[in-house]
Image 1: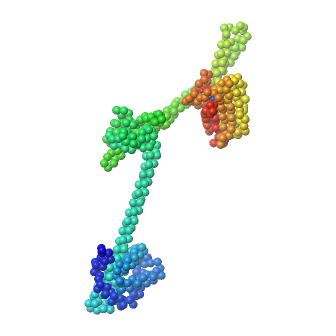
Image 2: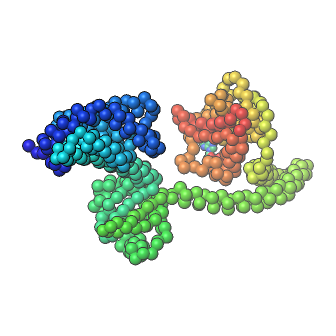
Image 3: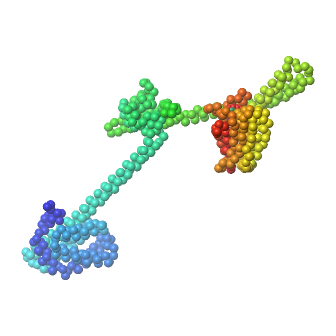
Length: 521
Ligand code: ADP
Ligand code: MG
C-alpha cells in the first residue's frame, strides 16, 4: 500500500515511537498548564492588530482557547494516526476559511513550542530532557507541515475553481460570438461569400442562397465568378488580383436574376481575411435594386417637377387667349346664324372648332388644378352628403350613356376633410367608373366607416384596369379624348389628406377606394 501523506510527513520529520513515548511522558506535567498556555497564546495574537481582526468577539476567543486545550492534549497524548491527521487538517482548513494569514501560523506555533520546551526543561534532566525536547520539535514541525498542506490544498482548489470559471466564461463568450456570427452572416440582408483564391466557395450565406437559388452545398462546387461573374474576361478577376496584391478595391456592381426571374443589382465589396496559414477573399454584396430604382425615379420626378412648373406657367398663359378665342367663335356662330344660307357648312366647322377649344380649356383647367398645390380647407362634415351631391350631379351623364349609377344607402360618415376637394375626387372617380362601365353597366358608390377611416368606394362592372398601368401618373390615359389627369388629381388630394387610394378587383368588378383618417393627423 502506498504511503499516505501523513506517513510521509512523519518519516520526513523523523517522528517515531520513541517520540510518541517522550510526548506521553511530558503530557501529565504539561496538562495543568494547558489553560495558561492557551490564554497566553490568544493574548499574544490579540496584541497583534492584524491577527486580531480574524476574531469576532470575546466569546469566540474563549471557545478557541478551549479548542486549543484539547488540541494540546491530543498533541501530547496521541494517538498520532490517520484520524489525528484528519482532525488536524480540519483545523487547518478552518484557518484558511477565516483567512488567517499564513505567516501568523509560524509565530503561533513558536509560542506553543517555546511553552512546551520550557515545561520539558522543568520536568526532565539530561538525556531524557534532550529526547523530550526533540520529540516536541518534531511534533510541532509535523503540525506545521499539516497546516501548510491545507493552505496549499486550498490554493490549488482556488486555482482550479478560477480555471473552471474562466473556461465557463470562454465557453459563454464563444457561444455569444457564434450567435453574433449567425445574426450577422445568416440573418443579415447582405450576401456573404468567401473563398481561397483559385478555389471553390467556402462560405455561402442564406441571403446568397435566396438570391441565386443555389444551395451552399452546390456553391461549394463552384466559384464566385461562376455564380456572379461576368464571363471570361471578368473585371472582377483583375479586382481580386489587385486586392491580393494589397490594393484596396472600390465597390462594383453585378446584375443577377433570382429564381423567380426578377433582376437584381448587387453592389460588391471585396476584402481579404488573413488567416494564419492562408488568405481568404470575402465578397460582401448588398442588393441595391431598390436603391437603383429609387434613384431613377427621383431623377425622373425632379425632371417632371421642373417641367411641371414650366407647364403650369404656360397653361396659365394659354387660358386667357383660349377663352377669348372661344368667345370670338361664339360671336362668329351668331353672325353665321343670321346669314342664310349656311356657306359651305361654315357653322358646323365653327362648332367643331369651339368644341375642340372647350376641350383644350378643360384640359388646361384640370392641369392647373393638378399642378398648382392649394392648401386644404378642412371642416367636419358628412362624407355621405358630399357623395350624394356628386352622384346627383353626374346622374344625367350616367343615364345618357346608359349606366345605372347608385349611391348605396347608409349612415352619415363624419370626418374632417376639404369638401370641395373631396367633391372633385368623387367626381373624377365616378366619371371614370361610368366611362369604364359603358352602356348597360352599373356603378355603385359606397361611404362607410372602417376602423379609424372614412372609406369611399366606387365600384364598376367594367373591364378593369389595363395591366401594369401607371394609373396615378399624370397623363396616363387609354381614352382618345382623356387627359390622364383625373386619377393623378385624386391621388394628390387624398395624400394631402393623409389618406390612401387603393385599386382592387372584387368579384369581377373594379373597386377604387379612398381611405381618409377620421381625425386629421
Ligand atoms: P382619363 O380618365 O382622362 O383617362 P384618369 O387619370 O382619370 O384619366 O384615368 C387614367 C386611366 O386609368 C384611364 O384612361 C383608364 O385607362 C384607367 N381607369 C381609370 N378608372 C378606371 C376604371 N374605373 N376602370 C378601368 N380603367 C380605369
Ligand atoms: Mg378620368
